[in-house]
Length: 84
Image (cartoon, rainbow, N blue to C red; front, side):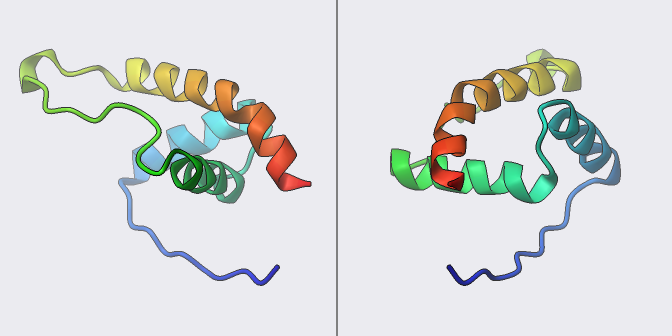
């Protein structure tokens, strides 16, 4: 399977937090993004709810990371099958 590069610009602090989360899950950034992309393609859309929220009641970074970890855990088995 041929691979290609994908360049994404993100906030430095967000990147560090995501790298730590993914490391805790046994993934690197590339693997985590691949899981997201494969899940999106399989789901035929974004594999989680995206909605407009009231800025004052939006989730904290810790809540977002916790939800992300939960979603990754749910998709770990699918990733392991796809990674073979």
